[in-house]
Length: 238
Image 1 (tube, rainbow, N blue to C red):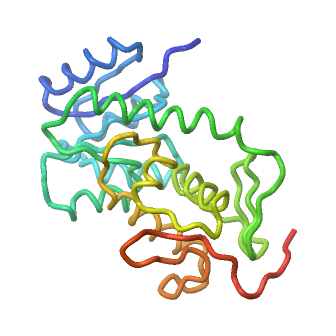
Image 2 (image 1 turned 120 degrees about the vertical axis):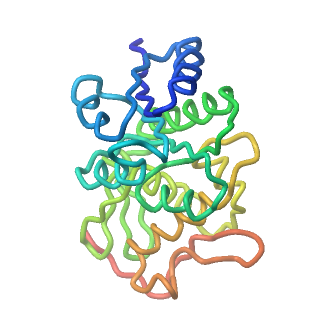
């Protein structure tokens, strides 16, 4: 089996060395770069399965790197590292395409767990998903092709948004707590920051709902979590 490749982007050599050492111990192939611009050259020859990306970088910061990668339709999973406690910085990372974030200082073991969870989710979902389409209201999901149509029109989702929508569809009508969604979609078996869920739900609503402020599919259950509801009116689309 080929080793999974992790690109580490951090301008502090001590942190890069710490991450590289621990990732190699568990069998990952690791390549380190030290500024944001170097990411785009590195991905051409290294082709990472996941990027560990610091927020504060020379030449191009982590937010700019995320935005540029997603603008190029590069959907490689990204875990953003930040030394800042400000929630707005973490949300900015998620808003611009990061799949997860961790605040420095962090445990290398927890970083490894999160990397493994993301890679495991990507690897297992296509093989465990049925080939038959999943539909609810005007939404049709093709799990094997990881494609979504709303009202017959293709919708571009990030890998995590797709995983979240498919998970909600499989549990339609059931109220799911944020922690249950972290466990089911992010594969976290430890207490995680549930704000990750809220941000991804918001992005998903923007893409599938007619009116994201008054959603008919993803319904908020106050003080509990979310539920995927069947709209009152349903039409069929090929």
